[in-house]
Image (cartoon, rainbow, N blue to C red):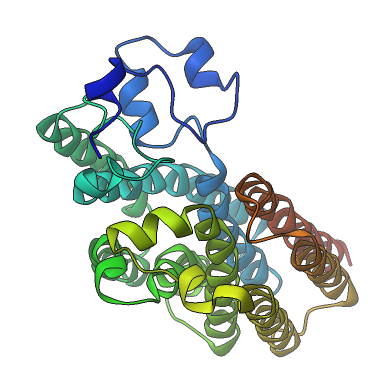
Amino acid sequence: MAPLSAQAGTPDKVADAPAGNWVDRHAPAFLRPFLRLSRADRPIGGWLLMWPCWWSAALVALHHGAASQALWHLFLFLVGAFVMRGAGCTLNDIVDRDIDGQVERTRLRPIPSGQVSTKAAVAWLGLQGLVGLVVLLQFNAFAIGLGIASLAVVAVYPFMKRITSWPQAVLGLAFSWGALMGWATVTASLALPAVLLFIGSVLWVIAYDTIYACQDKEDDAIVGVRSTALLFGERVRPAVGAFYAGCVVLIALALALNDASPLSFLGLAGFAIHLAWQVMRFDHRDGALCLEVFRSNRNAGAILFAGLVADCLWQWAF
């Protein structure tokens, strides 16, 4: 199957980008392919990478650090998450450029469609990596080393779909690393609450990325790409439910060990209800619905964060 660019010229958008997104409407024409390469037209990944960072920053702020420090770290994590998500997507598209041209949902991406050359993509990757490094260098030495260690996971992830049915687990490690970083930036160390939050976040990522992968099951099977969506097959709904349940239990343990108040647990309860709603709603045979449910995890993450922030404000006030 040839890339669509060979059949119908250069595309002006990708298949799964929201209609009327800011890149299509406002970005300069020469910059649009690079912003699409970074998924700036689909910012959901930036939010999902950011939430574990913000959860951890709020969790550690309950008993360590000041409000001004917490706000500064939240800003740095916001910038870092969106920049490094863009860098990760760019690396993924460089590695997967041949596969993407054979999958319906991804064949219009900038590299397989011919909008961006591989060399230009590598240069764009380097620029984003440089911005991410500037953000990382704002933290203490322990956090800097921890952040550098995450690059090993980021580097191997694009290859995992070729060798294992669990690439979602590797993505979980990469997307949950912020749960360790948020704690480390304040204490220059790690503790059990941060580790439990990290593992719980990994389970969250496995579940929501399994939902996401259900969109591509047929094409993935044809081109030989593996995923948990294919692995679980018709049992994907209970599998996703089990991962979400494990996520909630582990985060509850993290909160308990950190002496969180009922406000944090109220946020966790809202988070759990949202995840249960996702499990009940999604249908692995409906690609559009899978994408909608996957994107709703931005709201799920915000609910948990709101509870943690309320807890911080309460404890700082009293």
